[in-house]
Image (cartoon, rainbow, N blue to C red; front, side, top):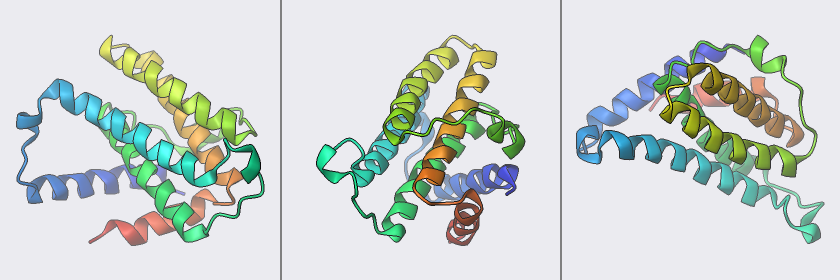
Length: 167
């Protein structure tokens, strides 16, 4: 898996979307644009968590259609990559991601990511790049772990991302 390729492809896709869109980023405002990216990431992550039903006791053995799972996962990944591009965290690679200790509970992974997204926002608002990149690496690593627990290999997701990225 070439993580740097995913960052590059996401950047190309976003630039195409910006060119096609009639809404300029200036009209949204820099402060709102910051919040929009993080809200989008949290929303898409929440949709993925909702699809897994991991928070419902009655749905422990819930079978998720793989196609839906991949779509929700990819939607979240796009915003995670976008934030990485915006804040120059796109320098990380899979070696760094793989070096992080992995939680084995979906509930804890989702919870940790939501907490770390808030911490990442705070670090970025304070221009704290070191804490920011460390939090981003943890978020990305936890996100990869979610995929693995759900039976999605990152190589499989990488291939799907490449196929779906060009429109």
